[in-house]
Structure formats: structure tokens, C-alpha cells
Image (cartoon, rainbow, N blue to C red; front, side, top):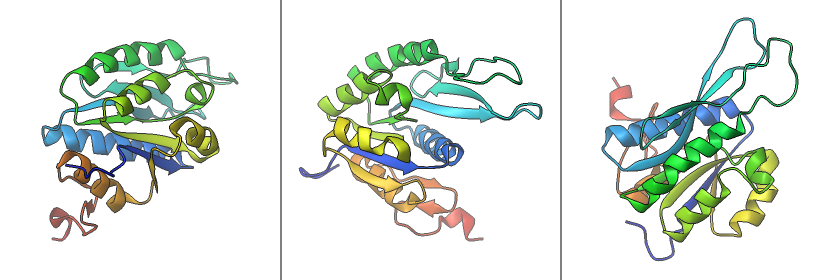
Length: 194
């Protein structure tokens, strides 16, 4: 378990949202497979041949409930496609899970809603208050706002620093997982050596 000076909040900075979504989803599913009490939201993206943007779906890890995150506004529509009500519904499932057994919270994105003071900010704050290890994907364009919100109470890594992420998670949860070809020790995972 973490030492007394260990921060319980990790920001995973990224430019490529698809890569960040995949990494955080893989982390959440790997922890669930190891029977770790993981809660929060991960995003799955589905690409359609006739659309420039992908369809987005959120899964709440604790319950397995899924929410359609993007509104289908047609092939040529511009502007925001985000269904903010889906985020509100998903957040309503996360809150009670934080009061139960929760080893780790994953929030896929500190996005525009959070930067504007809405979205999942209260869930992140509650997790910090409860000293629940929390991993949050933060687009680089939101790092300044994130820094003001998290007020120095966080560690930071790049989405490419998989070994650091896994080591951080292991240090807070005691759970050793591997993603792709990396484990928490930074070594290639055994199953990928053969």
C-alpha cells in the first residue's frame, strides 16, 4: 500500500485521445480481471466508414453499465456531439461505489465539461477526499486548468509512460498487472517474450 507521502491522484497527459482511451480501458479491464475493486469510466470508440468522427460509448467499470456518449447528428453535422446527460447518468453510478469497496477510480477524461467546472469534478474531488487512488486522463490542452483544480495533489505521467503508470497503480493497490508488452516493473511481460 502507498507510503504516507504517496499522492493518490495521477494525471495521464495525452494529445492522442484514442491512445489514451485504449490505455485507460485496458488498465480498467486488466484490474477487473485481477479482481481489483475498480470503479469509474472508460471510453470505447467505434469507427464507421462514412463518418469522420467515431461513435463514443462510456462503460462504468463497477457496474458494467454502458452509456452512449456521442449523439448521432448526421454525417455532415458540426459542433459538439457530446451527450452531457450520459455523463451525469454515469456519474450517478460511480458515487455510491466510492462509498463501498473501491481500490482505484479511473476517469477517462478531464475534458471540456470538467474544465468548465462541471462533469466529473465532484467525483474526482470525493475520491481524493476518501483517499482512493485515482487515475485521470488529461488532454494536454487542459493541463493548466487541471493543475489549478488538483492544486499540486497529483503525480503526472505521459500516456506513453506505461511502466510508470503500472508501477504507480501497483504502489497504490498492490495489484500487479501488465498491459500490452509492459508490466509494472518496466520489463516486457512474460507472455510477450515467447
